[in-house]
Structure formats: C-alpha cells, structure tokens
Amino acid sequence: MLDLVLPLACGGCGAPSTRWCEACADAFSAEPVVVTTRVDPGVPVLSLGRYAGPRRQAIVTMKDRGRHDLTLPLGAALARGVGQLLRWHLVEPPVTLVPAPTRWTSARGRGGDPVTAVAAVAAQIPGVHAVPLLRMKMGARDSVGLSISARQRNVTGRIAVRRGPRPDTELVLVDDVLTTGATAAESVRVLRTAGFRVAAVLTLTYS
Ligand SMILES: [Zn+2]
Image (cartoon, rainbow, N blue to C red; front, side, top):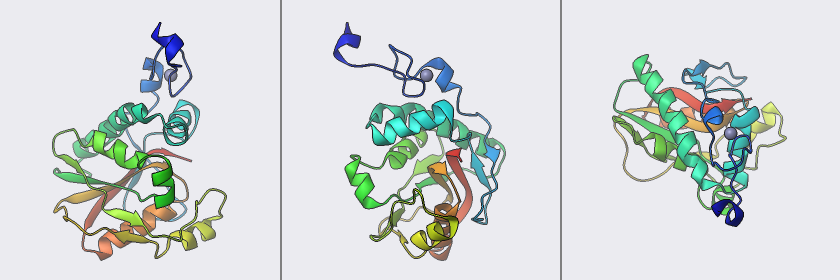
C-alpha cells in the first residue's frame, strides 16, 4: 500500500519495494583497495570500489535526486572501510574523518553536503569522529569535464581550514568519488600546512 503512495526503489539498482537491497549492500568492498591517482596526495589512497554499477547509481541518487536516506547505507559502507584501516593499523584510534570540501553552492542546492552526512554516519563506530574541517572558497568551479591540469588549477589555493575546534587525532580524508586526486591532494596539503596529521584518503568509489 505504501508503495503506491511513495515511489520506493533501491537507490543502487532500482529494485522495487526497498530503499537499499541486500545485493547492493554487498556492492561496496569490505576491504578497501589501494588506488593510484594521477595527482599524488602523498598519503595512502584507498577506495571501496569503482565508480560504476550500483555504487555509482547510489551516489548519483543520493546527491542529485535528494535521496538523503542513502547516507545511512553509504555511511555504513564507509564505516566498514574505516574499520578495516584500523585493523590494518594504517591509522590508530581515535581517528577523525574529514569530508572533502564541496563547493558551497552545490552543498546548499542539495540541502546539505551529502559527504559530510555520510561521514557523520560512519563516525558512529567507536573511536571514530567526523569533523568538517575543510571548506571550498568561492570561485572554485564544478570539476566535471575539466582536464587534470585544469582540475588542479581549480582547487589550488581554494581549499581552507574552517575556524573552530581542532581535533587532536590522526585524520582520514573521505569523499564519495575519487577522480584525478587533485581535490584530495590539495586537501591533504592544506591540512598538513595547518599542522594536522593526515594518515590516509578513503573514498566510497574511484573512477
Ligand atoms: Zn539494489
């Protein structure tokens, strides 16, 4: 009956009568894979799978179609990845997840930054916190369609540390999609310059 009122479909594959099906719950790897990026952030870069299939669809549906409920399964997937980084001792608890910055216009247009929401869900596991330490200054363009060098120019000097409490833990930069690594590299550089210890980059997907 509810299906007739609310169009209900899996955010990953479109299967009816569920918001997130069991098959899509397995779409994100429990073991992050090491990714080589064209722009090297200087710390290990790991991801939970290619930006394709249900992983890609889930991110697109969450960000562009306003399916905020998907922050829960995507946050759970990110939490599993963070748990594995802890078991590998790539990072020691306590650890703070820092969402990669989004252009403020897109964050506002989408009713809040989804990556920050996903990180907040992942931070519900013990010893893990999430602090949105970074912001994108005005002037950065949407990076879709830009070349690697244009992407680097687009973010260089455009990422800043927010004022506020400074976590005294190691940091893991988190994002939904890793492409060239330009945003990750600039984020890590800015955090290190501000005196933070960045252990790794972990993303839901990479392309
Ligand atoms: Zn599904």
